[in-house]
Image (cartoon, rainbow, N blue to C red):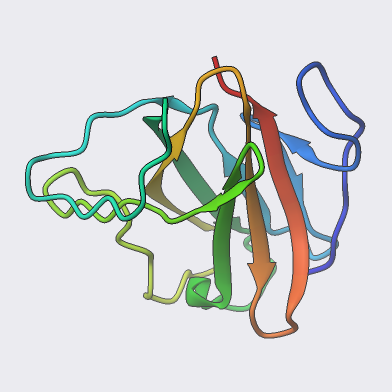
Length: 147
């Protein structure tokens, strides 16, 4: 998968993809990261670090493999996040079906959806970087201000 960026929108850094938009590789594979929505971790969730003034926000990731492509291993994708100027860990919440990254092969013509949650201070930027671990290259960064 190779990088293709979009123009900056309101509350988004230049050269990034806005939340809710779809990034498409040259092979036609598509990745969408939804707009962040407030999220409350369950009592059994592992939340890692906290950020003063921070609240948890969930994003839903959808990966689509076109019908004309070979099967794809989604575990090659690695997501990291930054809230404001702080790199943050994702929440692991089995009860809330959060943080359970896909590991099954994605067949041609199919899509796969999973969710991640991160601590964010409202009014600051959340950036979710999508990296292809097979080539160690950044595919795109979804970015926007969380309100």
